[in-house]
Amino acid sequence: MSEFPEKRVAITGIGQSQVTRTPGSSALRLTLDACLAAIRDAGLELSEIDGLVSYPGAQDNATGFSPVGVQDVRLALGLKPDWYAACAMDSAAQMSALFAATHALAAGFVRHVLVFRTSGEASARHRAKDAMNWGSGAPRVGDMWQWTVPFGAHSPAPWYALYAQRYFHEYGLTSERLGAIAVNGRRMAARNPAAIYREPITLDDYLASRVIASPLRLYDCDVPVDGSTAFVLSRLDAARDLRNPPLRIEAIGSAMHGGGKRAPSDLTSFGAESAAAMMWSRTDLKPSDVDVAQIYDGFSILTVHWLEALRFFGKGEAGDFLGNGERIGLQGELPMNTGGGQLSAGRLHGFGHIHEACVQLWQRGGQRQVGGDPRISVVCNGSYGLGCMLLRRD
Image 1 (cartoon, rainbow, N blue to C red):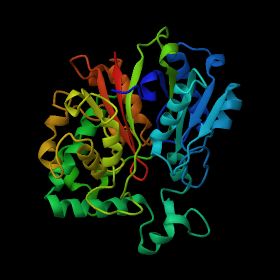
Image 2 (cartoon, rainbow, N blue to C red):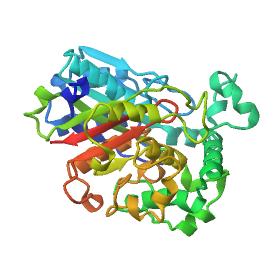
Image 3 (tube, one colour):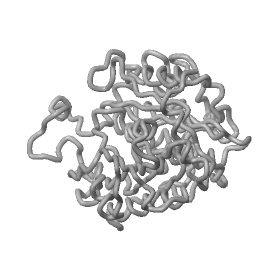
């Protein structure tokens, strides 16, 4: 296998702020809490951080999507980066910040990069009295929203409901099988003290929850929060002597060869297959080698698409695999979203999944820890931009 650049990079520290549905600390305070925790976890000093990157940079609009940017953190922490960047939304989604850091490290620009992502969506909803619409936060509707708002699609839920409807029609997926994702997420969240919703739910609870956009129900939709997550990525030669065993980035996938939300060619998939194929082409590992999976669940139908794109089973076979949820549980064939995922632990825009992958590989999971000494985790993020990667603990 060729020496791809990501193989010279590792995650060496992680940090996460308080994650909450109740407005309290400022977005900047939450960001600094996460960043300082990640730097401490890696065993580094502030002066050793020479790179800084975030997704998607400061976008302090009515939605609270990204209220803190790279310059905010640089100034607040007194960092002196040799390289810094903010990855735009038109990129490999949330994972693009880690990919950019990986390339800067592999190219030798820097030794230790701080990567962060902050959400202030709970506070934004509170300010808007829970009536927030993504497509109506400006005096004039523009960009992609001009094609959705006139039809009542003010948020992503109706978009993905269309994908779910088509998938149900083509492959016979049922609400009972889709509900296994939400029920499993809540079962995992019950073991995670930091999760937003920890009270277990049953399949009957799921089926009784209100329909948001048919066939998606309340429990199929992730939970807006205030919170921040941060990572330290290091060059492998600079990671060996740090506090934690390096979690090597074994392979990354960021390709988008067709389809996607804005130009779908197949409404039973949003185009993740090319990103997944790229990732698998950069490693000798196979899906059967994965010990724990953190699969994007902004909406549960996205989890279905990603599982198939990642080749854990064939097209249209997700429902049979999900079954009653046992196969994705802690003792199952593919333990999945072990921290509760975005459906129960909170919408950290995919960074929570990466954080949880590291928690599992460093065996910090406590009651939710996967057994058998897990060493390989797959993580995927996004739906309009796509990114996935394999993490490996030596």
